[in-house]
Image (cartoon, rainbow, N blue to C red; front, side):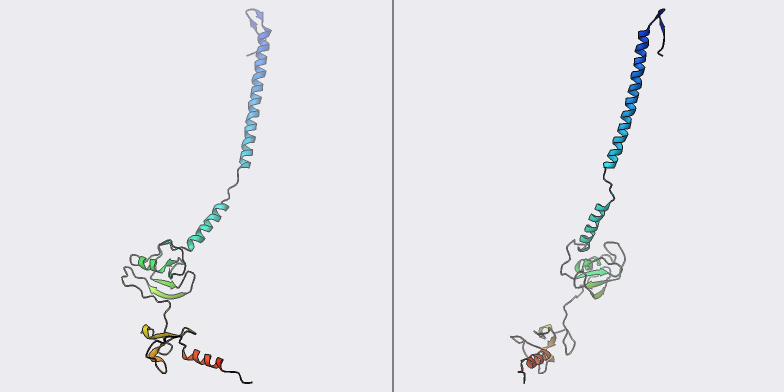
Length: 211
């Protein structure tokens, strides 16, 4: 404690002055420390204000882009969908290459993405196209599915067999068996061939107009 003291029977005001100076110094130090603490708090607040607020918007945008890109790729082979036939399980909307999902069904009848069980698959000509064929999906299926998305039938008999004798019209792409024509043909025409309907249209358009 500092104050008026008696040291060896003699007043020692110098000691008092020293003590008072020490007290003042310590108080000043305390004030400085308090001021430093306040400055530190202010600096901390400024640093917190300077920090960018991560609302997750950027990551959400990247996630969306990634999802869009993944949506156009087969989850099995990871190839981008182009013009190949694709298929979707009946109970979900995940797209796969037809060959990939057909091979998958030989071992399991669940979606490779969400494991939803399915009993049939919808086949499309291309990604985003309309359903053209519905095939049952059976586990351990060994027989290959005969998929002919460009199948052509004869306009007369309705059959699609005897493809070696099935002619395609160069005007409308309609199919006719050579033996179904009137009169029937014995050999495949070397030049262009037009079905009876297109032939009649061509003849009428080539006739001169009468004024």
